[in-house]
Image (cartoon, rainbow, N blue to C red; front, side, top):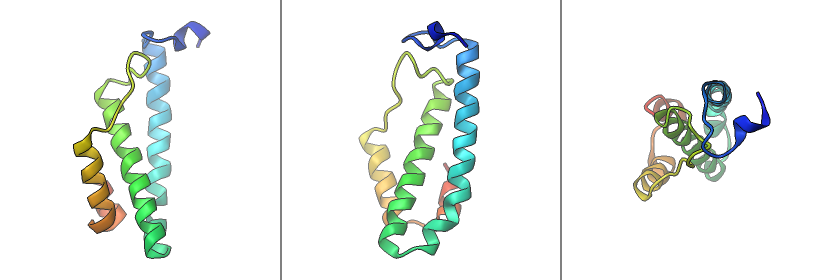
Length: 101
């Protein structure tokens, strides 16, 4: 990778492969942490569930953008945020819910 590969609008194949690799690894870390949300006090668990859900939602958005993150920034819209908040507060266990994302 060269410095030029990280400039805005330069989402070439090598950059996309790097972003994909980082996202795959990040998703593994999120998923391995799911049981923690059920093992801590309720309020902390809600926060962890929201963090996991938000992170996985952003990963899904980046994948839908074909990993082209230097031309535009992935964003959660109001609908996404509301769904995530309700899911974190009232949803099923993190493992069941995150498998759907």
